Length: 347
Image 1 (cartoon, rainbow, N blue to C red):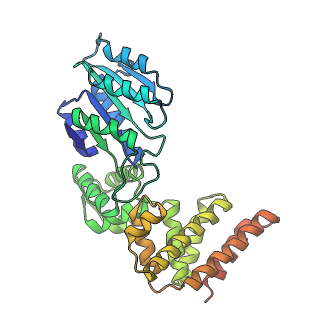
Image 2: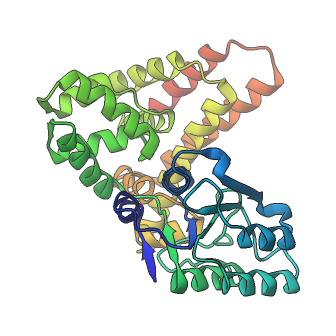
Image 3: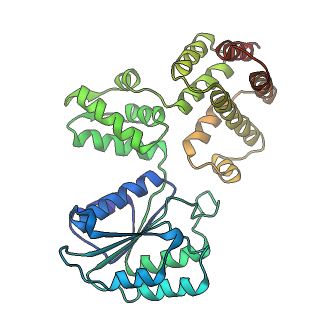
């Protein structure tokens, strides 16, 4: 019947257009959970006792069949929710029984499958990724006879459009540069963006949410601040570098994790630098190294422009030495981190 995006599902639920079969999955697990909550609330009328929840990791197919045949007593639908059923890990006879069961779902039954606890794509990335074969058979059947919802992580441009729409719905105005900045500061994380939008719209109170206001009010996520730090280091901007160091230290992140995050950001740039030299594109790097979010690779490509592999290797070597010292001797962690960053700034 249909393969929907989350926004289209929300529209259908608002119009009370309900299917008997649903399968909700994708890389954006937070969005999967949001869609499931909205679907369960609509189907059950907000009564959690009207929902039968089954654990897909130890699913009893006979129990599922029995539940699917029941008639609702005090609710409009007999709602069954199966979480994290992996068709790859169950026996062939169980797979056949599940697909056969779906052919005979009663009109008053709504059967919902979702996945958040395992990689349904089997490690595949890029535009051509698809669910593993046995899971795909279940998805294909439900797509043909019910509704599937694919929740994919959005890039910065897509999120900026959503952010501007959300601002208008709250009576505020917001231009694209401000929306793009918000998406970047929040690490393109939908739940974080939603929280920050509530704060910004309340402050703007029907006015314009400017880029300056976003930068003043939104606290960057750790990974975003680390990227700003590495960008400043590689471009030898000393004042900005030390400002970012202060921001990171104020977050009170454990030093081993902070150093590992800085190293990861430098490795992103190192990969982009090597890819640029080899004539590769953002899509190639995403596929080769399993990146889930394109904006991380895109900004690494921007930072890598004019950067030398030797400088990157030197910075990573300094971090490696600092981490070794951190784990092998009693040191002042903050001083060690600051001294390492200062050494990275030296040309």
